[in-house]
Image (tube, rainbow, N blue to C red; front, side, top):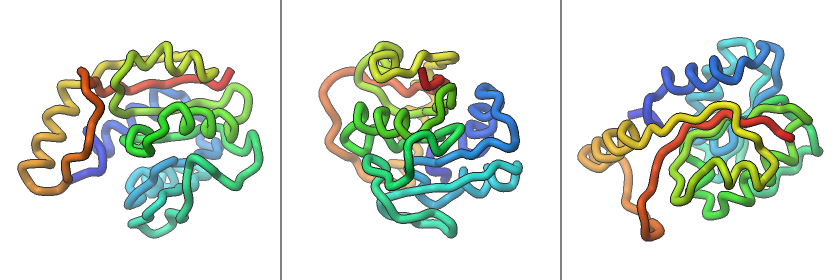
Length: 170
């Protein structure tokens, strides 16, 4: 099971939509087992990954809500299924904005309990592309529960959605 719905094909789609040059410096925030990090490097990107509990080679241990890198270090930030579980989605967006160069791209797919476009706009990220992938996420999550590959977590009340978003640092 991949660490996010759609696996490698989903990551490749995000990269295609973002139109990043292969020379881009990319940070995977919430890199987990490093699947996307390995893919980014195989495609020629200068990529790094950070996670609170790294489970893969090349993924650095660290809190992506409080990164030690200087402002404007990266051309792009990739995050799949990590900002929500940080418990501080606005904080994760602010840190992504801080470490991105002006015009840098945010490639984000995650669960949202509020409309994601206004949230990203408030945090300085005009959205260039959005897709509601809630149906795909439900299938992924139910399969993960069935295979006992995830645990239920306390979720806010209300309807949630799963979105693929490409945004740019204003």
